[in-house]
Length: 384
Image 1 (spheres, rainbow, N blue to C red):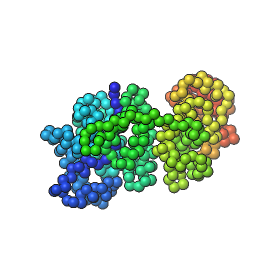
Image 2: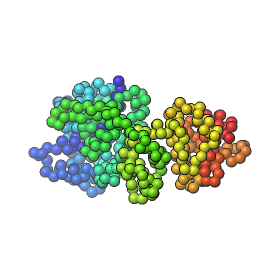
Image 3: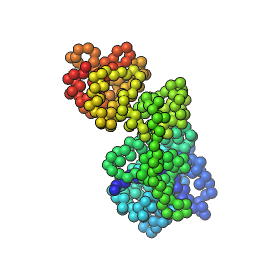
């Protein structure tokens, strides 16, 4: 069975190339002190570190590509490759049809290390290897790290779901990477990975931890389903008043703005299918005509379609809430493709759910009344 392997990446490939007997004593400390510096910051302010990184990059490359280098040496030098070699019993060609994604920080050292690992894997028959670098993700501060991780989660979730649909096994290789990154991905892996890979300290023996049967208590999420659905679509709250009963760990506070935290996204992703594929949610500025409800009965067994519809309605509600019911901003969203019908009686409009699927609607008293749902030709023929 094909496998998607997601590996957290740290800087061991660089730091393990330091020769303690020959190199200056401060090399390791300088690398540690500048571990969260971007390439631009290193280039502008740390010429000595840039020279060190350049030298270590060259050493790492020479070690990886030297034909006399044993696999055991590579595994000792690079934690990330240690896990990957362990996964394939030191035969990388076994993973020729697998996909590898390297997750690293938006730092000079993170970028250089991941680039080395990516190229090495590609040169050793693992062609489907890419690197994910979330802009501004670093351990420079707790806030920067939490904000960066909150943006990584949707990418990880959507990527994994796509591979799962194609019957891939999902492995998280957490042998490398910063401890904070490992900690977060360990929790994420409990939700999404078939197995999490570690290696015993001081050995090359792989530990594979299967996914635990974690189930989110839907009843505790249900009271907040409207807020969570809208926040997933990008809604930003500026007051705790509307969110006062939601656990603080689910929210990310940036000044006066509140969005979904990493944990909030994880929890919502585990229960949104059940909460969005049943009854229509009561979104602000949105109401439903009986004809719209009747149309939905035709897709009662299509949970994926109902979920997508409610996600789009949540998005529409965000626009309307910000504009106090004015539909003009809806026209600016390329996904919604909101527009008014021509040659129709009354002031009726429509917006896009997915390709070929439309919702017709009218605006009155700062609210949007949804009339019909279905295939574009059917809705267009009788939008009322």
